[in-house]
Image (cartoon, rainbow over all chains, first blue to last red; front, side):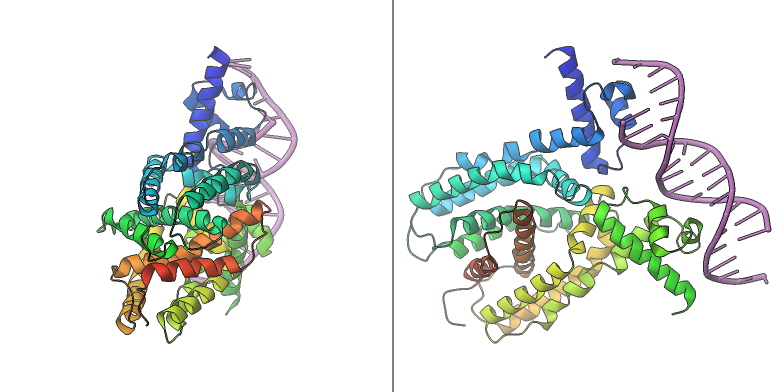
Length: 197
Length: 197
DNA sequence: CCTACCGATCGGTAGG
DNA sequence: CCTACCGATCGGTAGG
């Protein structure tokens, strides 16, 4: 990595941190420059605008690049084992990257989903492929449309994660991680027939 | 309502609209004043600061004041009918108030949940009361903790609503409202035993 | 002495 | 990669 790339990388890292901490409009180019250890004007030698920085972060450095592929790595003999394993893997990855939701929120509120279409177009085919593999190789899954199975699975742990944030903020964390086990149980009862797998 | 109250109300309405459209920091006091039809300085005769305006909107005018009480109005002989009815009522209310999520997002990203604790403290007891009534009066519900049942129910349609927004933005709306029926079905299979209710 | 509100401007900072 | 700036606009406040 030459010096120019290094500087560009430092700008992205600094901006990423400020964006998820404060939001897009609350972050100034001067903050980013100071954190990156460069002068304000130097940023514009690497990026044409503030929005261009956000776009690169949102499209190329979004945690989904680390989190979603874990679905493909999940293993398990039975559908129960597979779902449990996949859910645990993804929740762990999500908890390690709290910027996952912040970037989506900024995109939703401050950009009205301007860049989201591009991101989704690259995610969706991967997701559909994964769920088709899941259905083809497993028995005892109720005949829901594949898109519904994927959507509801992602909802499963996104919802759990949202609730965790909310309850944490309200200082109501008298629940432990067993709550997530309940969520998985509800989902499994929901999509599987009573028959043995 | 005297003239002062009317002006205050117009400030809140204008700020509310700009906040959910643009975010908090992207909205200027001048925009709010212009939309309310008053001079900038006049705002400060009604509110001490920009943040004070957001706080009033978030705590007193948040759509949850309209959406959550619908849970108490839901009816149905069986658990299936009750959940279906409650879910439909709340989804309709949520779709009519797209500011529901935007205000939460602004609070999360731009205020780091500063005001959320106050809001949750008033919501949670209502929710727990509702779910306890549901369990007491119904049979055939699996023995999940009440908090899990409430949390997963709210997740049910928040997730559906999130997915709707995302798919709408990606111009992938080849699904119709039957998707929500699938979500309800998964949830009902998830929380109910196979026995007749 | 109150309220509601004005035109003008404060010290600083925004993105570029 | 920096210094030195720009037109404009920021949140908040002055006196009357």
